[in-house]
Length: 295
Image 1 (tube, rainbow, N blue to C red):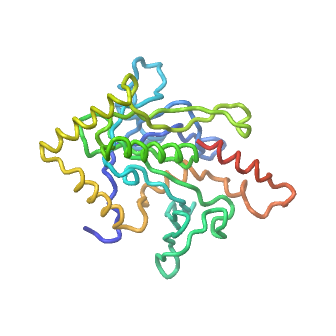
Image 2: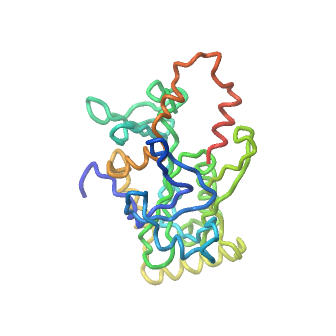
Image 3: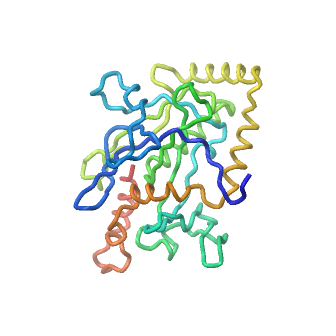
């Protein structure tokens, strides 16, 4: 295994809420009220749609607001990795990644491990350049049980909800998270900051039409069937953990450009620059509300 290269779960495509559009000569993210499943191929007008994007709709006009999924691993943090991330907006390369306690930072002397005070207390993060950033890998269908689709988000609502759900499901299933029949679901909410306009975020639940008890029973039966066939889930989780820890940064340079374009759009640093008139700064309550309003 090449040292310094993070081995991430094999990706077959992407799941997003919205898309990137061109406006006034700039490519900017545009939110949506449905999921979009794309391939890993990008054309002139954006990412090409994956066939599942249409197959999962009952009618062509139906909006895709739920996706039946399974997870690759029993360990929640292997399925959903969330951290504070700061990217170089010119090159798209990650500069600093931390968890609120420690971080790995690219410096002139190389990659260093340093304390991470979180974005609110970090001088490097001034101007809104550092954000919470989560990546969820899910399996759609039964054709490739080790191939996944990646949902990326910088929204507090999605990150908190997904993290809580996965830990809860792991607990109540007896560590059979990878065997549960689940559903990635789009939810909406309104806040004062959103001016009563709905904002959307991702949640994960048991599949529609299945009770919790039925889902737990199905997970136990699938776990027993896999063990009888020789499927070693513990070894798979261990291999994934070792692969992810093999590199300092998970995102590859080829992916970082699209990440910066979607989550750190051009001009954002100027809008959130820290050297504004203190009297014009929003109150603490407004800042907290703004965070909650993120999907």
